[in-house]
Image (cartoon, helix red, strand yellow):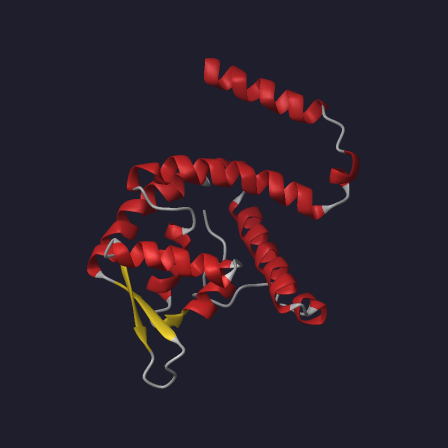
Length: 182
């Protein structure tokens, strides 16, 4: 009961806050949501001893074997140097490997080791729990719409092409997964 009361108190405090510019700007609202999700992810993944971004990195490598570090940085929306640090850590732990591409010696192709695939599977449950409160608050249709909108927002910023983002399909092609999933 105490946890429920604390949650209700936090909700009332947030609802009582006047939002000012937050009310009309996307960035601060996304940042607050990201802060909450990040804290939950850090707690969920602490037992695995991996740095922030490791699960997303493992997931994208597993889904895109042979992906380059540059492609991975773009997919994660982070700086290339941050990806290098994450990959260095994963490689030292025996979870991922990078091989020079025979076609382009400047390019590293990334893949998971068997140990990396096993680690990702162990992390799946705790990661799924992070997003449960959001999924519980939304209908399946609302959740799908939220993920579609997040994908469009990602493309608008990543591609820098407003026209392309505006013309993005309203529905995800069958069999595809959203870019963002918690």
